[in-house]
Structure formats: C-alpha cells, structure tokens
Image (cartoon, rainbow, N blue to C red; front, top):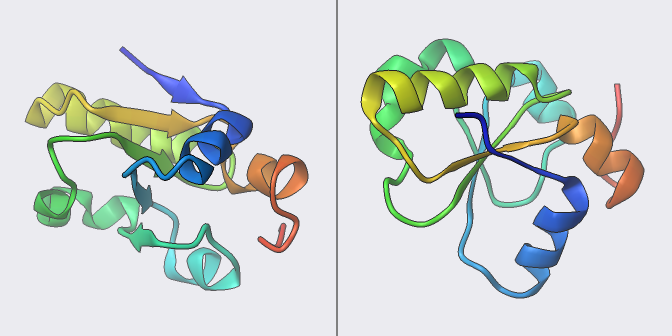
Length: 107
C-alpha cells in the first residue's frame, strides 16, 4: 500500500521536531543540485545493497524529483523487505521547492 505525504504536511511535522528519516533516492547529480536538509542520499539503483541504512522504526519519507522513483522504492522496501514505516513525498523535491522551500533548486 502506497502511503504519501504532502510537502506541507512533511514541513509541519519537521517544524514540530518529529524524528523523521529523509531518504533521497535520486541520482548523484540531482541530489547535488538540491535536496532537503538532513536527507540520506541513497540512489534507487543502490537500494538493494544499502537498504539496511533505512531504519525500520519511526517514520521514513522517501524522496525523488516528482514522487515516481520514491514510490518505486517504497513498494520495493514494503513488498520485498517488509518495511511498514514508509511514506512517499507527493510531488517530490519539485513540489517541495514550489510549495515549501524555494531554496531547494528546481530542474
């Protein structure tokens, strides 16, 4: 089951101090161009080998450019590895930049 979170809802939760692990699954050049602060950079292609870096307790928000690759990551982690604490950032960094924080550059 795909659970998502709007940029505004994520922003509210982060401002409230909630302990959320942010995992950005974009490629190196995309991540370097701009990302949410405190994001773990874990490209989608490296997910099988590095999945242990994603915590199993507490909320984890998966992030990409528009929300498609992060949704793929979420489905993989849920279906193959049994994660049940994942959320997908709806609209990805593009929506975050437009609706929450313009300092995260768009492309």
